[in-house]
Length: 236
Image 1: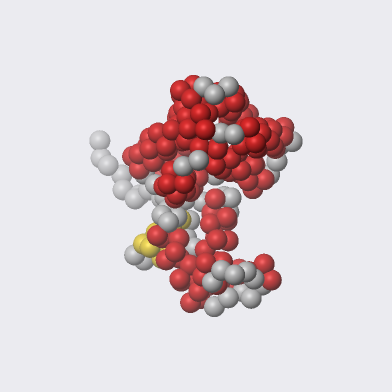
Image 2 (image 1 turned 60 degrees about the vertical axis):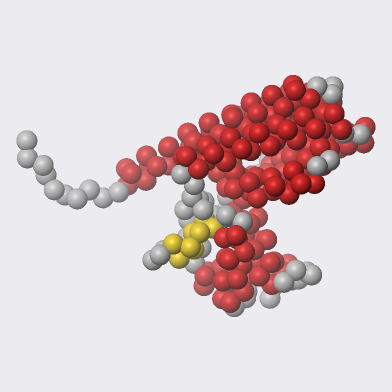
């Protein structure tokens, strides 16, 4: 077992955590197969713990078991994506509303520091994992400032499912747009404008949803273009 797998977690939990990072970091795209032997070799473990890790990830909605294909990274439909982002917008908007009214001065400082770190990551054109880490830290700081543990627990799984598709785009212009939208959210939180923070948060989530659906359409079109034709000529 490799040294980076040593922790207090069980072996399947460690593998599941590492795979989660790999999926959300874009190493495995939606719809990609996760061959059991390949994953076992990657982590230097037997196939049993990998199989258990897959079941843990399936419960989180990150992977699916498919007949004849094995385990794949969850590939959401457009309808499923829209449903997730609709709910995500409501929950994140409410979190921002709460943060604006409940956050202490220290918590506001943490939010501002996290936003500055995200801005710096975009300015230096950081690698995707670094960008995602900065973004996730900022999201977490807002939820912590909202001071609602139930809200945090309920949104964690939903956010991971949304990030499956958020992780597929890392274009510089999209990152800059994201920072601009975040600026409005953070500014409203800092001025204690709860409704303004909620509205800005929903706007940001909707922008991400539109981009994700556009990319899904592009990917489907590319896949369709590579599909072999039947070779049958239809008479006129």
